[in-house]
Length: 359
Image (tube, rainbow, N blue to C red; front, side, top):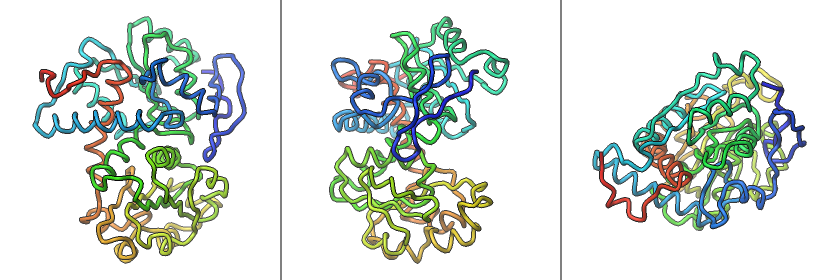
């Protein structure tokens, strides 16, 4: 594969444009451009690449359909035939057991055929360009690509080069976006808290490198949450994050007062050995989500984390396993949310899923 070019900035989404040689280009940052790529002329979902550019109606539709799928799962009905005859290719250029597994389960519960591409031993590592790989998969009559890539902008690049009948789902690209994670988080919040407009949400951790935090903030803004606070050490929380419409604090105790939702972010342990952070113990003392700190939040506050958690670094084990934690609920709901997104992107959601026959 040709060398990827610089993608969007981890905080604002801004970056330098690339060339047209088959390497990854930065997606345009304007919302209208995202909308042109992601939505059809009638406003329906075609690709799911970023929360940016989507409307509140788009997000509510995803959440509502996911609720229906969650109800089907709760009744132990494991499959619906909405994507029967379709082929979904999981293209994971980064390792991610949890995300890939939930996408695979979601596709299979929609009755799709699933193709998992082991990119580490694929033709890409043998010198074939990404475009060559895409063309070969298209020739195999794939209908959807679920893409995870270390380069920001990879999913947009692919969406701009696939044939019209193919949909692209972003499963995480560089430090830019992780939109399905954000939507499963919104699903969990809505199930537990209802009205987004009345919530105080605190996001704590490595904001600088987090594609999850960036997508969460965009989704919360679109859904009307007016009180979002980002917390972390100065080295991991740049001032530019204010451009996303959040408050910045470097003291977790003060930020947690009267919080309704507390979201911890995963720290890359290698950063503990860099100049960005000193030690795990020091980070935990200043920014770890503990039982003592949770007493500052509202009594009915919920605790979330995208996983996997580093216990004793980002979160106290008793909190991760405690009554306020909905971490496992996020995982379960993630399957229903990804089912909803995949169905919408393929245009195969019936008006009444409750009448859809179950396999």
